[in-house]
Image (cartoon, rainbow, N blue to C red):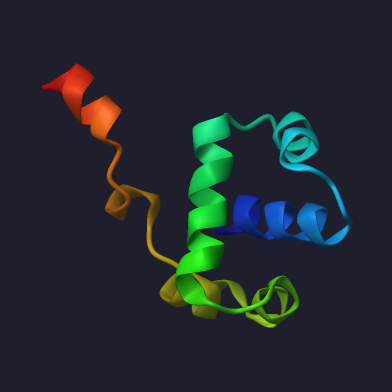
Length: 77
């Protein structure tokens, strides 16, 4: 998860659009949105986040399982 997050942040810093990031990383729209929610939740810039080591970044960013997906819950319920 952290590696994909770092790649996402790097691509965004390079100026790639969300669509290009999704194509490059072969991630779904929901997956990319989860990464971007992580970014917004921690209130650090992309440059700051990329300076963190994996362990520190993992502690700073919430796990994907902590983000609620109401539609998924509805379908699985």
